[in-house]
Length: 67
Length: 313
Image (cartoon, rainbow over all chains, first blue to last red):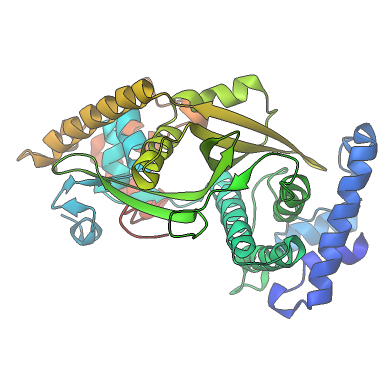
């Protein structure tokens, strides 16, 4: 999933076709996991570390770690 | 008369003659809201995340079905629209993702919603839905319409897709929400101008009755998306009633706009019972301050915006 987070933060004009396929595959897998066990997926998003919070704030980004 | 208003194709001077569901709804909600959005041509500086998210999502799904109608496989079409959605949600000037000011309707969740929607609904072999084809053989996707509603009024809109299900025709639409989707959620569409206009126009375009609108609603949560499909139907008599209500509102607005004092905002009454609806009217700040300072607030909090029903978005 970290690969996907990196891809989502990259300029989309620089993403390769394989990168797009990775994003789609990751979300398909996530959906499969959700449908298998919705309760496990519906818990609250994990808290960011202090460094991640600072980075997010500095760059004004909305980072979904997608764990 | 401001430049934007002068240039509007759907207006003759300050009088609107080409109407879509957005302008009809604004007029029915509050004449003053209509004045600010359509005559003064302004919108809040900060774009609603719901409009941002919903607009990108709708564009992606419309493109998906267009690619499918052109012969793409599900995977090919999905690949194209995901790539485009990533591009459209990127701030190319700043080199960062567009900021979605929401914990649920984020850029990542936009991509997730598109992909999960296609996974759930794209294969229609078991759903009984089929894209309707026009008499020309062309698939009924991306149908823009401009239909004479009366001698001097036209209705304008855009149908993303028309489908057949159990020998009846329906327009397809999709919505997103951060709340739970259930019976109560779908009931709001039973009196929706947008759904009524789609049904009314569908019959006019296709020369055959359209039973209503199938709405695919996506509940956007932090870590998942849940979909529900609902239907809002319209009988011919319901459409007839809607038509007369819409025309009555249009006449009211046109009478104000055609009057000599149309530039006096006092001629555009505030509907004070609508100010708090749907999270609050975007122009509430203007109505709540003294008229003497309104121009300052307008300058600081709003930007020019040309919503013209006759211009394709």
